[in-house]
Length: 461
Image (cartoon, rainbow, N blue to C red; front, side, top):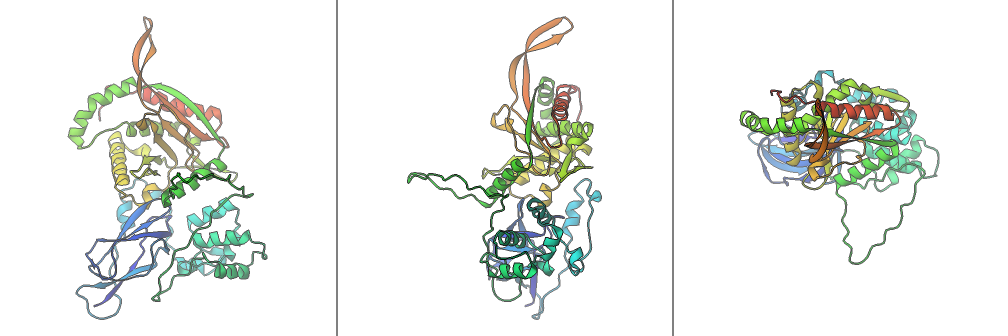
């Protein structure tokens, strides 16, 4: 039988590597076309890698917890109905193009089709993935330093592990940061990632040294009693913890709060939800309504829809709203609705339901969590009235919506003030005080509240 070389496919514009989480098939197992072979994880989501052919799994070339680059051969498959021992060339489907057609605004993405090998020939034009660039920017690694780091990835690319090795070496006072010393270090350290090979050996996984800001502070010692239970963080929880710590270290957080009367909105939804579910086959929740209000407010205050790059403020052209979703495991993930301001309320509702369902069933694609410009988190789902959420970097603001409760409130009428029962909720906005002042942050969250309070009770969807 002929052999098919299974490569790690592209999983998004900014994804260049993935960790092998679990092999779903073992050597000798039967595989059908489009059947998942293994689970891989990027920095954001886990996903399955399906087989494009039918046959038998011959060999696994990466062990679980090892890191593979996009394009690396991760397994070989004996193909049904093919003769000979030469690798079979199977026409690949451009899954990115198919999936991207469903994402509004994808035509605005700047896609670089230059082959990586052509870029890596000259050190001055060397290719670096967005992940490597982000780590370098956070750790103050210059372009010259990046150029000097030996790459162990596909076509000599510098991987995340290479940068982590370099940072660990940089803290070692054995000599200057020269190419020779770095290469000597990466050959000597035990956790260095070996370059991909096509021999019969398996790629072993490697512990990742932690990235910390200097000076390093020793954490306080934790007293552990014999009766205490020790729970090791899983991969996603470690990523979340690292992301949250870096956000607090990066952005001076300020919070503003507004109370909104959403009685008209609640009554409208109660009136419409039955007919909507019957017509569309799914429920309309409050989340898409909140996202619509946020999108409108971001159009009114575009300087909240920004990121910070050193001393530069990057004003984002697109309004991409991330919605924080709690997973059954207790972890958190933030799928993104692209170009939310261009979608109707029905479109937002379908996008919210689709992303929430795929998040719960672990079916999100890496692109589903990329390119967010603002985040919404619904803490009211857990009965909380308000909170102080941590900014999702590199964004500069995040809005928490609290639970809606009935309260006695003063109602102004043409005949005078009166007391009535109203549906009230709190909006909590955390923002980066480097670029968003109190006046801007306060006016923005008040504008969101205004859109919710002034809801048209006769609106049709």
